[in-house]
Length: 242
Length: 228
Image (cartoon, rainbow over all chains, first blue to last red; front, side, top):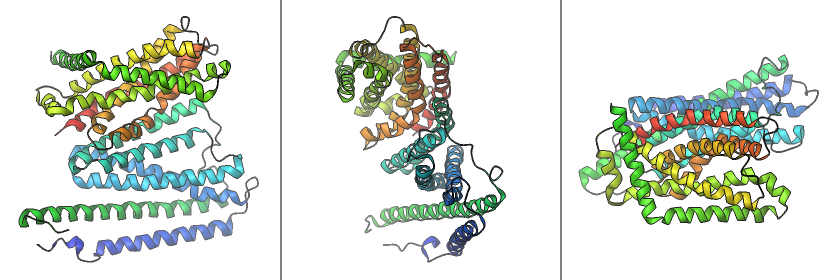
């Protein structure tokens, strides 16, 4: 059997080492943001230390939404340009987005229990987040069940774009249906002591977001290269030993 | 007049599907009886309190429509899977999206007929007024069903061609239909209670907006689904 010659298999490349550095940087940023958050922000008047969940909840929610925006853009680029790497990028972003959305919902639930007295509320943002999670779980299920890579790329690009289009429509309809949520938090509406820590957490999660998608994308490229190598070997040898 | 030719092609696909259904009736009868069964099951689940059943009727009616109507969509493509019929249809000259419009039209007739059966039965079982709110109800049913059928026909074009089609179609379709379910249930509830707060109209507008966004969106996206 022909040995796999692709440079992507010959140990960690400089590219892969750069990603490892970024990963440690993201981890360090998260630890640093935590230390600052606990050191400088006093307990909130109403919520006490519970308020610190916001430092995680809000950046995680934003990066989750950002992941699905990446799915939307990469899907659109795939349909326009038909280059496989856009499809792999969309798939990587969808996986990261599903994990971050599940984390957003869990953190929100843990926060809601002591402050609102319930684990769940039928609020527009909470409900839309849950529906968004299910839309992209469906996206990943479709990918898992479709075998032909080219067909999978086209189908999931269409589904990824339609799903993103649905998010504002779901949000508006649930908002009309019921709204009891507090005003959206952002650095401009929270006290300065909290704003610094929130910003640091936001930077940390932005690094984690880029690191996760980049790593997953790199792994997807390697998977595709491996499949292509196996197919090529099968063509030249007439048989495959995997 | 190419759009006229495309409309004729769409009508031919719809006519073909409806003729196949009319000659066998296997699918319609099964789906209609499943809808009746679901209506009864909701009644058993909620208990025999007439007041409580009447209050829940709008939600029950729409869940019945969604759970039984979804069975029409995969079947609409499974007809084409035998003997490479889908490939042959796609080989015909002209816009492939005429195939989508034809299938949407046939499925729309299918689901609306099922609703025409389910609605009077729900009125009997759940003690609902039917004659007075009928024009409003018909509007809700038509607008809600258009969005439901367009997206259902779109997702079934993919789901019907993979292994796990029974579970994949609802997994893809139902999260997209949340706005339809909310607006249709609220509008139906308003119509059934005589619309005292005059809110039925705004829910109808939401349904119309959903249709205006997702019928063209799924029509455009269909081209990418059937491309070979």
